[in-house]
Image 1 (cartoon, rainbow over the protein chains, first blue to last red):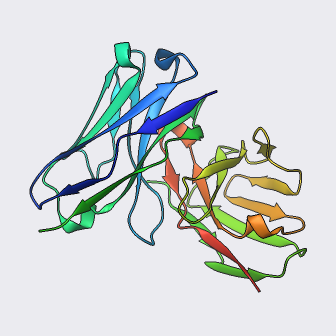
Image 2 (cartoon, each protein chain N blue to C red; image 1 turned 90 degrees about the vertical axis):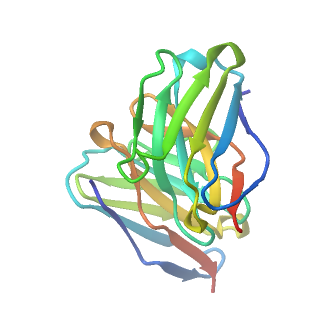
Length: 118
Length: 107
């Protein structure tokens, strides 16, 4: 069965960076793209970007394009999201999600809570 | 950017009643729309894609309709496990945006 398992809770200080992992299993990693979505406490879902599991092509939301880096390790079937220059406004749950076909997300990771606090 | 607007923000419904949720796109997105359910403390779950196709394992009481800019998610008879937040998402032309969500609460 398809599973996306994310790394654990992170606590960071303002100005630091965080790197979240998303390990895929149950399907061929290179056949699908993975998207990243975040959710601030009590708020809605915000799209951050995506990476093609096969060729590594990626695209970022304009809001994050200068602070986020998406990478993947095909040998480990794992995608990574690194966010730099953290502020308290980056405190959120970060999700990876597999994109099916042209655009919907059929499987989601369990989420990684990132807390930014001095 | 395509803006998705959901209404109402909160919907109070009694168990067994019907719930109707709306989602409007700022420009035509054809049928490139998905609905997700998010229960407290959980990741979102895909309910509907292609505006009207139920995802695997989703009960028949969930149905989606619409195309272009106006979309509806209907839950025909609310069960206790259906009280949650629902998000629409457009995926038209290699862009992805979510609505702000509708919370379905017990009346």
